[in-house]
Length: 161
Image (cartoon, rainbow, N blue to C red; front, side, top):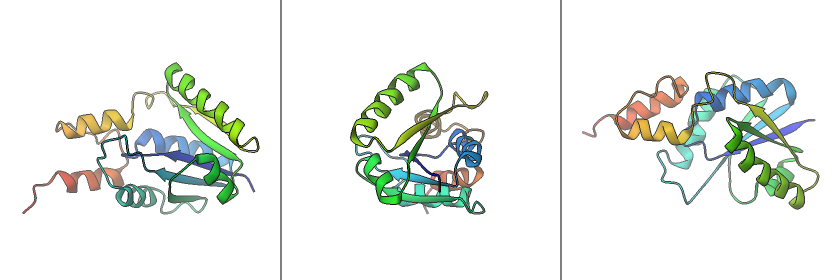
């Protein structure tokens, strides 16, 4: 069975992430979206909210699991029996960063291979960082996130009573 792990903080999960997972489905028998925790990032959604949103996005997809994880991605891959790490590339800057991580992952775990998919035209400009910035400043992110994520963001924006 070909299992891929798609790791990230996904804060929030974007329509570009969704597109990448949907395009990768024919390549793998199972994709595990591994929602990591990054203490260095100012969060917009808590860990459980991110997991729930992504599960809602893929609620009808049998081959997709969404789980929380911490620690090294290659250790998580070994734990779940995954031989592949799925990553998206938007530009050459992403390539440089992701290539360095992939090379180090190969040193740590030679049995786990990184697979890169280029962002689809019209999605490469979308990043979680940009979504957070637009949202925190009151902008419309409806074209940048799946409907399930937008619903939660809209709820968070409503004034507390």
